[in-house]
Image 1 (cartoon, protein in one colour):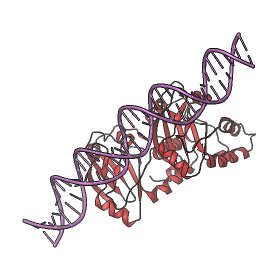
Image 2 (cartoon, helix red, strand yellow):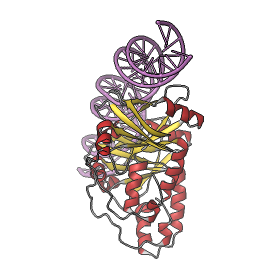
Image 3 (tube, chains in turn brown, yellow, orange, green):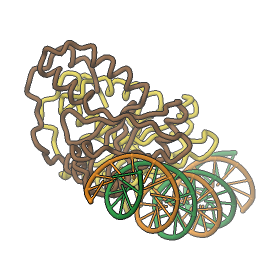
Image 4 (cartoon, helix red, strand yellow):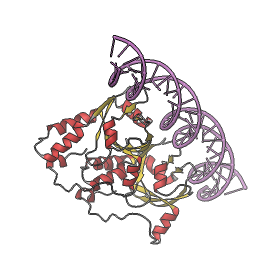
Length: 155
Length: 155
DNA sequence: AAAAGAGTTGGTCTATAAGCCGGATTCTGT
DNA sequence: ACAGAATCCGGCTTATAGACCAACTCTTTT
């Protein structure tokens, strides 16, 4: 599932999945999606149920004495919101207000969905276009040395 | 599949693949093409299905905590448009409006297709001739140091 | 010159998304 | 415990972008 989609979010924080996401989820027998924070940018990551169980199992298994590992575990695992949806409906998804806050989408109407294959990202529209045109948002470079256990993973 | 082709695009953003591309696709049993952004220039890259699955798998597996890797993942994966076509038809391809915008082909009529073997590029005609005559294009130069994981790839 | 294949264009129809509305359920405060 | 209020969730309506269908023109080939 790749590519760009523009969707609107209503004043109550609800977002409807585009049709092509819905049909893809249905054909893969997925009945839940998991929304969580992106560790680096003011945006959200969305995983499908099966993908999430692999990722979360892996993350949980890492030894958490390393502060960087610990921080990433907190961010990803600690903010995960599991959404079971009705496969027959329009798959309306409520983004929890804490995550809306984090992605700066409170009181905004337009979101961008960025399909990355096995997951997708949710961005507030202006933030996304800033980033695409090269404008810098907050601090870019993660200039710490990452532990090997994290380096080998892809979120 | 090499060489130059001039094609027209209609007001709805539809483009017809030249006959030699079609026969090439058929003889290779390809049933889909993937259009996405070029990371450097205002143009589009088109991959065939088999080529794309290799490229996207590789890109996805890279560790995305590196901001440069992440940006390339956004550009290539996050803008990909998958087009399944009817092999018996004329292989009309709709270029999504986001990509038309990026390649500056809105309200233009003429495109250039540049065959690069296992992929080809789509350029708006004037941009292409400007580039060929050495004129400058407004685009960002990748003057950053690329991580090894990216350097070893070819897009 | 005729015919066949390729390229281009236009029209119509359907699927999809966005906004609105109303009902239901939960929460809160008295 | 009850009433009012706020939040949550599904259905309906309308506008529009994209898919489908088909015709027309141009070029090439024999």
